[in-house]
Image 1: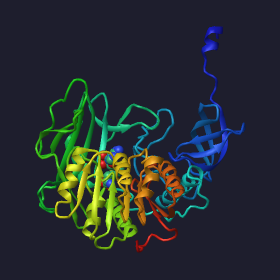
Image 2 (image 1 turned 120 degrees about the vertical axis):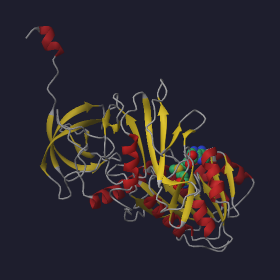
Image 3 (image 1 turned 30 degrees about the vertical axis):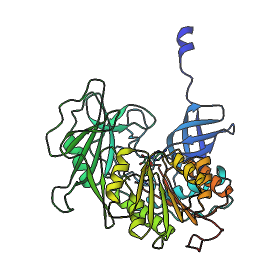
Image 4 (image 1 turned 90 degrees about the vertical axis):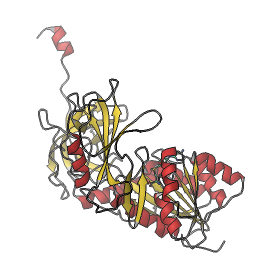
Length: 445
Ligand SMILES: C[S@@+](CC[C@H](N)C(=O)[O-])C[C@H]1O[C@@H](n2cnc3c(N)ncnc32)[C@H](O)[C@@H]1O
């Protein structure tokens, strides 16, 4: 071999046997390399002994590919989905939508509880945080909405694990039958389109069981516009800088959660499944325990999922939502109640209400992944709520905001992880805080 060839030859990848002990919030197992560096391994389970090949070296940590499981966990299962695949060269594609299909669902629930606990301990500095068992609404067939990327051949799919290229996916086990039907109707002729979101629901105004349950495709066009859209009675909306524009048919769907029907426009956020949404509503209602006439502030209210349930319990609700589309839906969804729906940022609303010495019996907040921020969260205490219910989609943000609330005088009463996204690394949690310490039951003001 010439010297120039040998100088460009790759060093052989390092292989190591590891005992795995920890877990990252992305669902990777953690072990230690012989040099003491933390090493993250996707597809493995804490407690396993594995052979790995290091793929990424950083100053303080490394990432490795699972080569073989030497001592498998009792919770290791055959992944139910063929797209989950392997990482072996030439092996089947590994869809990045899921991270935990190799783990029995009961262990997934336990792992997620542990992640929530560890984030509260490490980031929130809570000793022994009161984290309940994980609630699991469903382990398959639960998604009523899915955002597909598009391959260069126009097929719908999801991004490859750890990469940007798209794995074409015909059938995803996480989708409900209705959502899978929408994906099949969408076909695979979307060359040039960036993304297609399928959202199942009842067309607006039609009762459930009317036989015309449909949904909508929300299409993000690429630079060259939209190719011909497949025929059918599915509504089509195009994303635009000013929100989705209706291209064909009805693009607003109706969602049923418990007894309540919610109107959801194409541009509005809604939980990805109604089974999971119902579990969140139950937890929020239970913690809020509103008495008729109680005042409730619902921040980051979306289309009014929690606001409507609490209004139905007799609360006087003020809902705040930044997105005009979702706020418009919330107004419709709360039309039969004496509710005030404000369009605008929650942070400004809280600052204004605190400055005006307003108070609420209960505050509910369900911010996006970044959380509400320590400043806004701390100011909630000035509204003197007896109970704060915090619905979180990122345990790290919850931990930061929980610390701010507790430093402002509230007590963390309970945290319930909810596995809204079984088989993926995502975790939702509902945290309950009380004023005057201890309980979150109604108290006299
Ligand atoms: C996780 S969703 C929750 C929505 C609703 N609680 C539900 O469960 O359907 C977060 C919502 O916050 C809204 N949002 C994002 N940033 C906001 C802000 N700064 N102020 C108010 N709302 C915001 C989004 O538009 C979205 O509707």
